[in-house]
Image 1 (cartoon, rainbow, N blue to C red):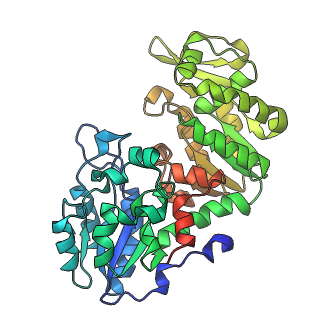
Image 2 (tube, one colour):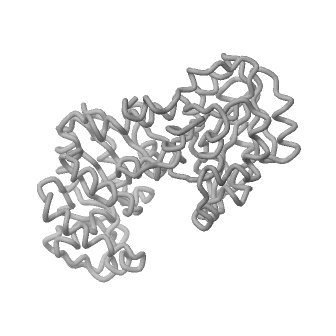
Length: 416
């Protein structure tokens, strides 16, 4: 792990857990099928298993706290019973579930744990103090969180706190930053692995370093772009998705009323100004699309940017752009990806995303990917074992790469 951060955060391997009750904060928040309400990707669950196995081997009593959904994705806010079942299957031993976060029933269940036993407590987001709306409105400091219901209820009945939830590192919530104030605290192996992979991308990348930025959530992409261009981490940035559209608009291309309305309706046109600045200062590093794909009479058609504007909705990059991207990826020493190239869920527009993933799978460079849509897209088209590191984080990952201080990292540095 990165020395500057690693020397300031205790590893869970420094503690003795025999007959101790461990409060383990995981991030196993998983994509949910909107129709069946079942988990559709177990990536985060799978990545939590090594930490759990280690604690079991050490004779710990393990109480897991975790979340599913939030106010911004209320449709995914539900019981975590299936998460306990998935953990049970992967561990080969029972992970009990209680649909109570930290009330009397949950407290009694934690107190009754025996060495090697595990219980997953109810969804943290059942508590008002754990939802993003509360965090945004109330803005508590970690010391002020000691009187929250969660901390008051669980801190007195456990011996130590382990956090292995880097994917939620950007959250300033009691479950993430408060227990460090009063309990012996350490980081799990997954957190160290995540930070190590991302630090390598930022600080010691093999050159040339190529960033592939796509998708719809471009605020994250633009924050990261500024950082990696200014500090020299990126030698090339391949822009697709809405990021690519914004770059074209910044270059003065008229995408047509449909595409520009889509961008303006979502207030994404605010990124045109910084895009112009990046192009003025780093144009040789930024690769934007030279052709785009749209649908006409049920078929895929492509148009050169020199033939714009068009009254069609652009859903993917074209094949000339794909060839340019493939060439850059084949030469890369380091590759970082966040966001798909197009609307890959529609087979008509999967070509760009599919080609990029296959190019990355075949590339010799060290590759890191992260973000829910990114990982889902990768799993759709390639064997992700061909990626050197699949990060569990999305927002936390991008903020880390953007140079933003993360609440969890700061709390772990200052832990008791």
